[in-house]
Structure formats: C-alpha cells, structure tokens
Length: 498
Image 1: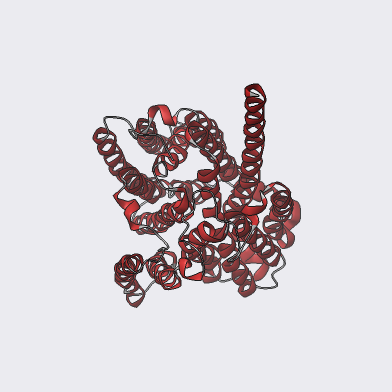
Image 2: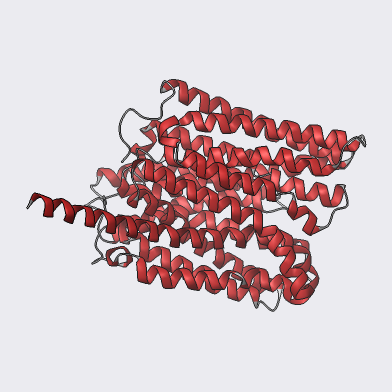
C-alpha cells in the first residue's frame, strides 16, 4: 500500500511539473511577443512618419501613449489577477494586445495609430503582472529561480531581435507596408498563446468573477468587488499618470511639471486610503506591510534605479551610431545582438544559481554594468581620435548584456522571494511600475542632457556625458545592493522562499 501511495504521489508531482512548464511556455511566448512589439517600434518610426505624414508629436505619442497606459493599469491589473484569477486576466490582456496590434497595423492615419497604441499599452499592462504572479504561484525555491532565468533569457532575445526584425520587415514590405508588418507580426504569436492558454491552463486559473476559485495562496477574505479596492485603484492609477506624463511628453511645459508634485501627493493619499481600507476589514489592493520586507523594498529600489540608468543605453547607442557616425537603422540594430545573446546566457546561468548566491549575483552583475559603460566611453573617445572602429562597441555592450542577465531576473527572484502568493500579482506590478517610472525618468533626463550638449559640442562628447550619467546611476544602484547584501551577511534570506 505504501508503494502504491508513493507511486501515486510521484505521478501527481510529475503531472504538476508538466502543468508548470506548460504554463511557463505560454507566459514566455506572450512576453516575447510584447517585448518584440515594443523594441521593433523604435526602428519603424521614420517609416511611420513618411507613410502617415506624422508630426514629431505624433511619433512621440506612438512611444509615450503605450508607456502611459501600461504604467497606469499595472498595479490594479496585478491585484485583479490576485483576486479574480490570473489566467483569465492574462488571456484578456493577450486578446486586447493582439487586437490592438491588428488595429495599429491597419491604422489609416497617425491619430488611429496612437489610439491603438494606447489600447496596446492597456493589454500589456493587464498581462505583465499576471505572468510574474503565475511564476510566483507555480514555482518554488530553486525552480522559481530557473523560471525567472528563462524569463530573463526571453527578454534578452526579444529586445535584441526586435530592431533587426523591424529593419528586415521594413525592407521587405517597403515604406508603406513595412511598418505595418512590425505591428502585425505580433498577431500569430498572440493567437497561438491564446489557444495554448485555453488548452493548458488549469480551469480554476481561467475563471473570472465572484464565483471563481481563488488562486493558490490567495487571501480567503479577498472576495467580491470590494477586494478590488476601486478607490485605491483609481488613486494609484492617477498618481502614476501624473508622475509619468511630464517625462514622456516631449514638449512638457511648466504647467505640465506641476503634475509631478500632484502625483506624489496622490501617492500619499493612496497610502492613507490603503491603511484605512485594511482597518475597515477589507483586503487592500496592496498590502503595505510588504514594504517592511527588506528583500522586497530593497529589491524594488535596486530595480527602479537600474532601469533609470541602464535603459538609456539602448536609446543613446542607436542615436549615436546613426546620427553621429552615419550608420543605417539595420546596422544600428546589429549593435544590440551580442548583448542580447549574452543576456540570454547570463539570465539562464544566474537563474539556476540565484538561490545559492543571493544578492551577490546582483552585485557582480552591477560591476559588469559599470565596466561596460566605462569601456563604452573609452571606445567612443578612441573612435573619435581615429584609433579604433566603432564596432568595438559590440564587445563593451556585451558586458552590459552580462549585467542585464545577472541583475534583472535574479533581482526579480530575490525581490519576490518573501512576498505572500496572495499578493504576488500586485507586488510584482509595484516592482514593474518602479521599472516603468525609472525608465521614463532616466530616458527623459539623460537624453535631455545629451541633446543640450549637442547644442555646443559634438556627438562623441555628448554621448560620453550621457554614458557618464548612466554610470553614476548604476554606481548608486551598486551601493544600495552592497548595503543590502552586507545587511544580510551576503545571503538573501534566512528562511525558505514562499
């Protein structure tokens, strides 16, 4: 009888393994689709401008509209998944993203393209926190690190292949249809993901509504529409909108910048509301006690600072090699390939070892990031002096690729390690919102500094200043990571991850 019981348990575990990895396959398919859809647009902007007779403001909103709606819905969408079922919300997000990709690809003018991009941002905001929450829910311990490692590898491939694929599609379809293909290419992956999710996701995971079965680890009190905390959702959405808008709007006026203190004030009101909501016995959209968890608060700060600095690299390099060195858009896309390959390898390698090494992994990756930025400055200056080719940037950006894989996925694993599964979606969304705010602030400030320098100096000098600013931000990130690591004696946690 004991042997039969053991055999049955082994069968259940094997079935659970199959379910987990199938879920991850669907998640990674969608993450790949959404990230390619983002990185591909940068290459398509000149073709969009010519084909639709779009203004500079129109082009700005092709990028900014997506960023705004994505950031605004993240936290509320994460909590909705925690309450109503992550799989169902995930599929809704994929459907919205796929349909809006079709609308963007068939847009007759710049106005409708931007409407489609706003909706596309909503779709991405719905699905992204569910992906993080489901990894948190279905993977434990070392397996969770591996899952986030594969997640990071997918990110590396998607970001690297996006610009190259975009250049190829624009060449294939010409100026009229090429840019449309950069949106329509999302459709097959979206349809495939929806079909596989409906087949592979466990049925309770797909349920939506008040009769839905709660996710594993969910708070039993978190039932009904009150648990969605509509007032809290509105407050945090408006706060993120007010904070992001001045940074993503290229023609921000003094009046626009007044939104920034308003956004900070709304965050204060939101915190007060969340505490009151919890005192009344309801389940708030974010359990503010998670900020007392050192791994979460420090990890979220590290992630926000890292994205504030490092994301701008992939804006400055294409600008510099095209406008400063005369390379084509396709050639500019090639500069990211070695970095993407090394990101893929490093994320997978780090994901298998993050539980063993803890925050040391992140600290090591940040040293690679600083080295990559510093050596990129050296390459730019030596190239300007005529001593070496600009293609040496492939090697220095490769170091940044190692940093990407060693920092982002491991830090994500460590940040969410001690977060209860019942708040996995909303907690992951808070971390992603920090990334979004950091990215928007960093790109706005660093590119503004570079373009200000270009008024009086050359591209090599201006991009050197931009790289130096990035290096300072990464150095600050390293200080935070070292303080956190030393505070824990070099280890992430003294107890098992949840």
